[in-house]
Image (cartoon, rainbow, N blue to C red; front, side, top):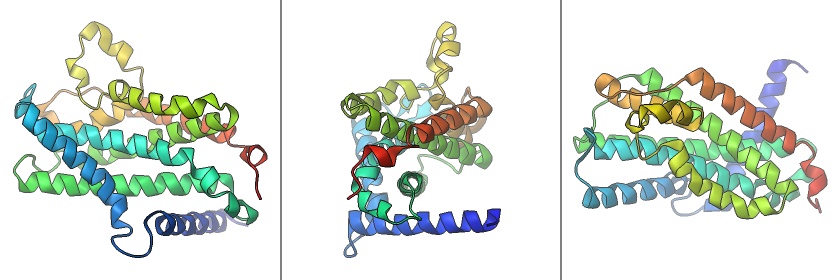
Length: 259
């Protein structure tokens, strides 16, 4: 089997799993797939409205709407990827009877589905804020795309890593919700790296997650704000997280009852 055939076969399996996931999670009637976009959309608009009521229009010279959008949508992406990956295996055990379906296919399908939903929601929120005059078109499209893809890459790494650990250690199922909340201060979704005192900034930037968010903000705001990021560092960390998660999932079939 050639590389093209291998990729094509696995892409078809992942695509079929994504369609099945949409149907089983959202049903065939009503809004269906739109709920995949609607859930993060409602959360983001809720936070935007709340912050608009409680906070001034500008935060450190940045307009509140786009600042919250660039941070909170990233947080939702992380948390949804992690949350739905934790149940990916148990919810689809029956599919493992099919020889072509591998454990990794289940996690790829769920993570990619959440990435698509969060991306679509991000676009909708962005368009609404443009219509309201809160933000202009991105100043650097490449930085915006690159940062968002890096966030999805690192998010999938965290998701499969936590899921793999949960299969081996029961305690992880209780710790993962706590760790998900820890992403709020660790990822920098509600503050800029520039706001951190210089003597602590380099230490903080050892955490890979802020690099992607800073890239997204650099793409949206341009040179108007000072940002700090290293895309290669974030890319490497995403690779490490994904690789570690895949290793932990290597013998996942042996750790669950496939009936």
